[in-house]
Image 1: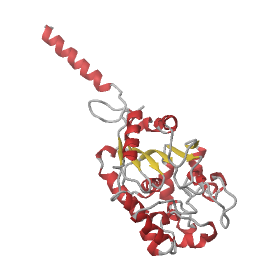
Image 2: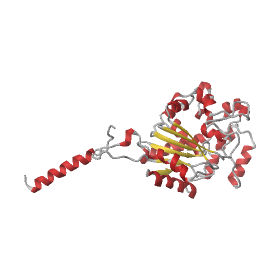
Image 3: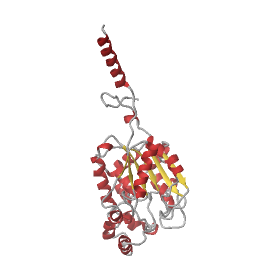
Image 4: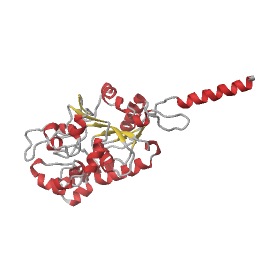
Length: 314
């Protein structure tokens, strides 16, 4: 065999070997901001970029509507629908993705997980101060046009159709002493948590329990999420504001309405408590509790054939 023939053979062998090399694929993530925020704000943009820098995974802040205004005035059902359509259109997410949610953005995140028909799979979900079991008072807003409008709406009947359709927090406001009206008239959280006895949806539970990891982060000095244990699915018992039930003491958990117990029994739920006020997270806590789950690579996309771009079995 001449030198040219030998070189061709070596190249062919090298190509074949490269085609068999197992390489890792970074799973992208989306970040969903909270109320009174928007992706163009430095705080949210920088946080998304920080997570990308620390994890090495591509991240995207997913905006819904116009940001600040719609975070207050667009009902969460519609916010979840918009988020669903956006993730289905993003080619970067087509093989699956992770979610980081902040405050109210966590309820949109869970809408993506439970309600989004035909969407790409969600692997890991990291919740920062999510009001998962509801809130017993409307979050602080401050001043400005949107806050004044929100204040006017709050003065009305929080469970009326008009307010449910025009004030996002009304969709997860849960008054323990008015549970009948909450279950009858609240248009978002009862559905999300499968709380209505004759309307529990197995598909929502199946989708939620398909998560690889659920990280629930509570902030010890949180005064926005009331009670703060809602970030762990804890809440007041029906009919009172005094005692607080841990997640494991609630019927949502013991009767496994959305699969939280199933996930927990499988070791897939991390209940994390960090120092700080509402979503004010120290960098070292971000590195410890958030970044590892953005680096995690599900087996189905962990290794690919370089030539065919198809996944390889582990």
